[in-house]
Image 1 (cartoon, rainbow, N blue to C red):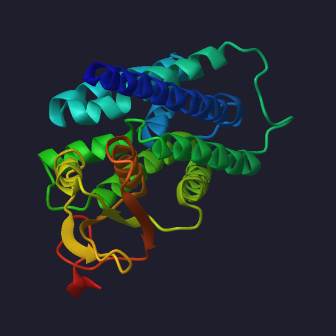
Image 2: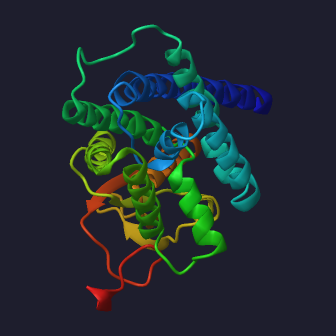
Length: 301
């Protein structure tokens, strides 16, 4: 009986992985098309390691996808040594598939979206396509391993007292400014437009019009196991309290955690796999003030 249960669980895990894989491939096609068919033909650039690859293209005669591949693998190796296997697992799939998709697209003749060069329109299209791509990837619990991973490594090694979002913002700003120095100020401004649009579209894909901070409430008999996952795997704090059902009078434990949209997806997936009787509620939060890591101090607002 136990062996059948394990076999069923393994089959379900394999099925879930292949479902994730389908979404990841679709996202990579969308993102790859954005870079190869829109960004490059119109001479645009972007933030993240995409922007770094564009800067490097100016100084070496190497294809964009090859440069991106090299950067992605380099970030993966650094992530493995600095952040550990858990973080590396989240980015390894995209490190292989996403640059590979772009590499294939570079060899497709006349792969261009716009009939003629239009930088403003191309910047908008890039933002929309990139946002769709990133939103799909993050909603499945994966990550690209770009500047967000680099920001995590910088925070862990050098700036543990600085918010991750601020480090990420500075990194992307430096890359966009660097692009401006190499390709001109106008291109840098278009890259900024692309980044803003991509961020908004990504948030819409994941949570409609909700904000970046999410409150997750979980009522489960396996609360301690779920709390351990949140604290050890996601490195987030959690609160446990007791709630009583009005109809049954039964007392159960409730977990409350504040996290990012991507982390809320990971929590949802974990709970779905481990306790199908659990009740999970997700609430968007405008802002949080307090002593929790990643939140604003109440005396700074």
